[in-house]
Amino acid sequence: MKIVVKVSGKLLSPEEQTLPQAIKELRDGGARVVVVHGGGPQLTEIMEQMGKKPQFVEGLRITPPEEMDIIEMVLSGLLNKMLVGAFLRSGVPACGISGRDAFFLEGERHVLKKGAEEIELGRVGNVQRVNPKILWTLWESGFVPVVSPVCGDSNWHALNVNADWVAAHVACALQADFLVLFSDVPGVLKDPKDPQSLLEVLRVQEVENLIAEGRISGGMIPKLRFMAEVIESGVGEVLIGEGSEVVHLPRLLRKEGFRGTRILP
Ligand SMILES: Nc1ncnc2c1ncn2[C@@H]1O[C@H](COP(=O)(O)OP(=O)(O)O)[C@@H](O)[C@H]1O
Ligand SMILES: [Mg+2]
Image 1 (cartoon, helix red, strand yellow):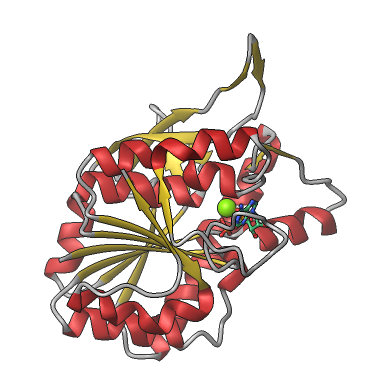
Image 2: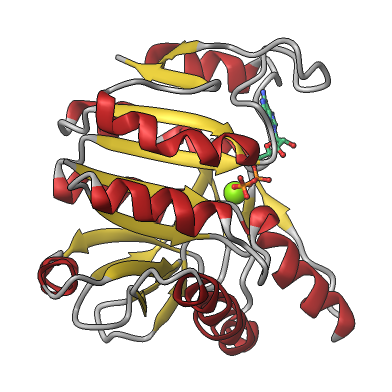
């Protein structure tokens, strides 16, 4: 069983124990797990400390080329090593990599189109090719890959990729049994202001309508945008849940889910 777990930057903490414990149980149950992390709030905080004002278009962080170095330092340095450290302290042999290591994730700049207009996002990218060899190499030696959301362009220079996209592309390439996205909301909500309005099932063909109606906005847009492709590519199941559900990850070994939204064809 192959499982791709994405954890929101909002959930990352140096004292984290629940996630390492859950991953340990999955490994002990025979699953091959890869963890992808985000870093939104930390990037915003550091950019603001530097006097810069973060800007987003449809949930994507505009990345001026001169800010890419700092973004990469935070994602692949600070946060990746913080999460790896938390795993190691819990006895889980994690190994941190970014998409720029070992030819892992090759992408290109992402162009956002609004009608005829093309919106300039700078060093924002999307993954075009996944070379999963590094994952298999790490798994075969017993390590758990922990991936920061930075990929290489055709010359292996850094691009900032939405972490949900990284997780989705990795899941597709692996034909993963599960792609699980943990965020700060119980799942996809029918009314984003009402946490009780959880959609337990969301059909991929409903997504664009919900975006058009304004029910899905901000970071939920990129999270859901390519789900049709993900499901078509043969990923077994896609789940979105709240961080508090991480403790229930081992249920996947028994093909059981947890509270959240299941994305279906
Ligand atoms: N319909 C919706 N249901 C749930 N969350 C939504 C919805 N529409 C917008 N959102 C927003 O999307 C956010 C999740 O995306 P994002 O901020 O990028 O977090 P993550 O770090 O998990 O990627 C939620 O915190 C919420 O504010
Ligand atoms: Mg996000």
